[in-house]
Image (cartoon, rainbow over all chains, first blue to last red):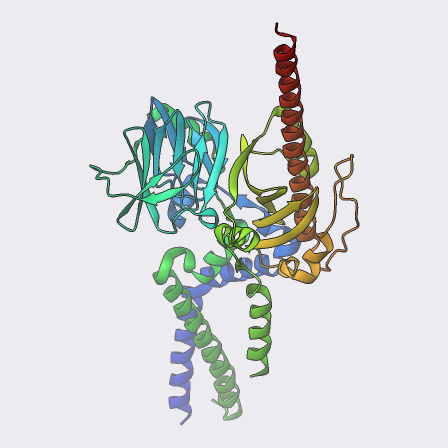
Length: 252
Length: 191
């Protein structure tokens, strides 16, 4: 009995040591990140924003689409946040994406997700027609033909009167709708420099590292596995203490 | 179960108020029917932009503002940000005072109580002072301070714009009268 118990104790201790050694780095790492998260408010971790490009790439933040509409040698584009740009100048706010653009009757027109924006040749906002004021909900593209503006809404062609802002259905056939093209490199660089990049708070980063989420599903499973090993470590430790006492009492 | 009930109540109180209550064409029909309103534009001159910016405490964007009219009644539809998102507000001005205010769309999760008629009724009959302020006190709503402020700004701005339209029309009428007088004099003086 004593010999069998002795063998079990030795085997248990051997595994206890092995498990302990294999999780030592992760235990220290989880303890430190856990402590930091526990004191996040006092350390202001959530206010500390990281904007490293490799981190943004890792988190899958999309960079601004470097496309726009070339009209009369000028470029209309959208930052992807709220601002509509004529060349490098912000000219109006509207919701992305920029669905289409045209130059009609000496005015620039930009169809955003929520509104049709009218700008004068200097890029000054003349007016916005939103969906509440009569812009069709499913407006998806615009095109100019014979100095008139046409809107595509649910495969139906609509004629837009730039002066009265009235929209009427028409049978006019168009060859296609305005499509974006790549912005010139210089302008794209200028726009990117203006743009305030989104960031990741230090708190989010530490939390994701602590949970393993930073490395995706595999990371989460790995932390789960480490958690199980730690439970096993506790159980083998408890068993070692219990069997050691038992062995001492039996005089082994 | 109780937790679910509390969660449902909280959810409903923050989301039920949001949304589009009325589109602009529907609002115009409500105000002018059976008449068809005349659509017009007020061009925002630098002076007018400056005075309008003072009223709303931020620069005014746009070169013109669209309004609708019939006789002495004008209707203005404007957007103003409460806290973070714009509130679309329709204002009916008749004979230099507010006839009606209606919240057409509210997009934020708090402060939507401004859409209640009990609140907007306070603006009825309110005029603008020479200092571009409302001549009557508007009672606020607890928890909707910013929305109330936005509605008051738009109400003041609508009265200011209406005043500009009226002044410009009376100026035009005076000019026409003077021209008519001059042409009549020329006719009578002619041999």
